[in-house]
Figure 1 (cartoon, helix red, strand yellow):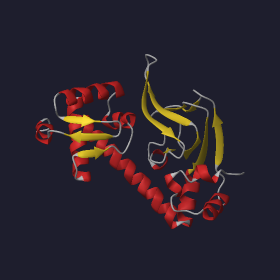
Figure 2 (cartoon, helix red, strand yellow; figure 1 turned 90 degrees about the horizontal axis):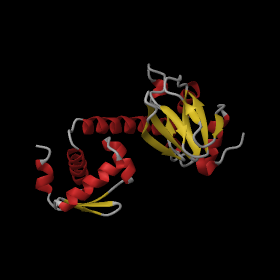
Figure 3 (cartoon, helix red, strand yellow; figure 1 turned 45 degrees about the horizontal axis):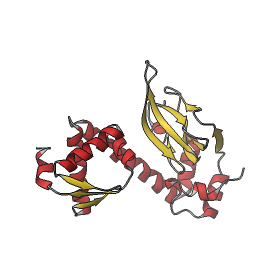
Figure 4 (spheres, rainbow, N blue to C red; figure 1 turned 30 degrees about the horizontal axis):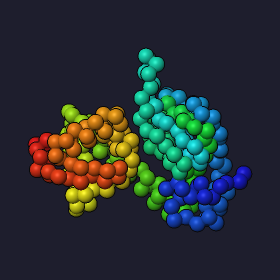
Length: 225
């Protein structure tokens, strides 16, 4: 089976691993590559998770489906992103949400036993996998923290102040898109945009596409205390 190295190298699991090393690693296991058409289901909620999936091409959505027929997108993944890495080693062992291809996509699956095998063969890959899991846990902790706030403004203020402490500046560069920020805060993107506009009108912040400028840090703090 041939692999597109440039697509695989986008995956954080293979950071700092050479093409020769990557080919050697993949040669010791039997990963499976599946193709999906737009809107095709990759996994249903409740299905057993026995492998991690790496998006090679296209994009997918993690969705929560309700009995009413409505669906809420929990997360969106693109080429290089991974899913199932936390679930496959948990006691739950089943997908908590439904995974759907939002465009024509190709997924590389590596089963649980092969993950253990390749991590034991390469220290860099093991470190990358542990870092991936740690970052996922930190992200989940942030989402839980944001859920504890009652209003969208409180969630935004908490996020801005956290980034202010990290970046040590009042003109904060956003590390991801507005949609990703909405997912992190657990709100709808239109609601987030409306609250940004209100906070600008109230003289709290100014913003562009990828930057937030803090105008009144004391008032931002007042919303949280």
